[in-house]
Amino acid sequence: MFDSMGIRRIAALNIILPIGISFYTFTQIAFLVDCWKGKVKEQFFFRYLLFVTYFPHLIAGPIIHHAQIMSQFANSQIYRVDYKKLSIAIIFVVIGMAKKILLADPLGESSDILFGVAREGVAPSMIMSWLGVLAYTFQIYFDFSGYSDMAIGISLALGIYLPINFNSPYQATNIIDFWRRWHISLSVFLRDYLYIPLGGNRFGNFRRYINLFITMLLGGLWHGANWTFVLWGAAHGLFLIINHRCESFFSGKLAFQSCWWIFFSRVITFLAVASAWVLFRADNLSAAITIYEGMLGFGGKTEGAFFHGFLADARRLSPDGPIWLVGTIFIAALIAFFAPNLNGLLHSARNSSIVQKLTHWGFAPVFAGIFFLCILRFAKNSPFLYFQF
Image 1: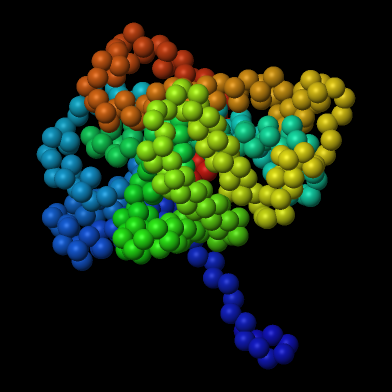
Image 2 (image 1 turned 90 degrees about the horizontal axis):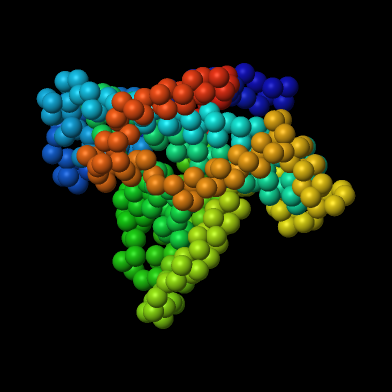
């Protein structure tokens, strides 16, 4: 095809990529690299085929490693029905649905309004900006946490334990700790197959920080070919460098960590993560800057007294009303900051008394009630956020 000036134009290809293409790719990159290094013990083709195409994790992870899964496929016991595993699996699926439908989706409606306003170039007020950013901060948390629970539940119903991929990241006391808790399998992949091959920390601190920054930059680019994702990765790269520098500086100088110090560390970490989510969610840099201006108080002004202005801004954000929005954010914060992690309960103590109590028949009406409430609140066209990456 040629244009009027005789220059050849290549038509864009309309290619429909398979669901979960990035997870297929990461899984096989790890397998091939480990084969080259001689780390792979199991190379039976049909178990490898099952490993690559194993569906519960393909939408949003975890990125499974052959050593974690292929040995389970080789165990003939997993092909028998295990009613204990099945009962635990149902609990995980129901709780994951509740996180997604009852918390993440309603918060997503409010955050979409804020980011839609910013995309149009309208400056939101400080209250509206913070409410919208917090709504998205908890939306992506419970969306990803809900999927992680459901993936583990679906896999467990088939007899396979998936590795933990989400471990209460908003309870982290620093950014290093955050990345040990958020999308754990991606962090491990980036560490083992990018950071360490780049040199890791073997060539001094300066090279270490460069490697960290490059790793996070490429981790951001993995989420999408957009400057906002690149800057999000760059922001977390800088956070990690600052975190490592602070650890080096304060090493041995803090004799103890009081509860107030831990509280302060968690608040600072949460604010850093929440601020970076603006770049992750914004449609473009202009929208992100508009929201940052609003968060700093340089955006639109709230009319009237503070309380009435607060309610007015919350009303603009929430289709269900200001009380619903503020209440949902409050409940989400309580769960994210203080509740134990369901995945952790399963993987740290598969036969723990807590898990045994949850699978008791007396809890069946509770989980049935949660399930039907999810069905009532279910909204169409509400995919998991990590479906797009």
